[in-house]
Image (cartoon, rainbow, N blue to C red; front, top):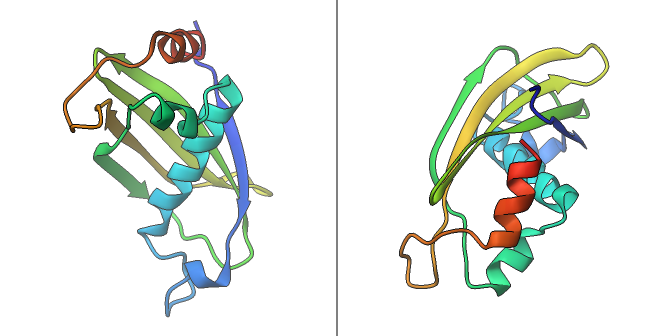
Length: 136
């Protein structure tokens, strides 16, 4: 079965670039975060709702491979997919493209742990679990 792909588009701000006029490498993780938040919104479970239920989803691992830089004012397309959903962990993969030419610029992933307000691992809420499973 083919994985569901979630798409998010954003434009590079001048403040996101470094002295070489490339997007600063750390910004891509912020772009991943934006795509992840939109993915949750699209499946009908905004991150804000997760927090009101006393559950947080911190990043416990992150990785990115850089193929080509993005520049100020580029329109970017970020495709995200749910890779793994295990007990108290969630892994999401990302591919970031220059939208017009669909040139792949970056690919990576983030792994998250579901934790409670005391910082202890916890199971995700059943409603979120169902929505994540159906989005795979």
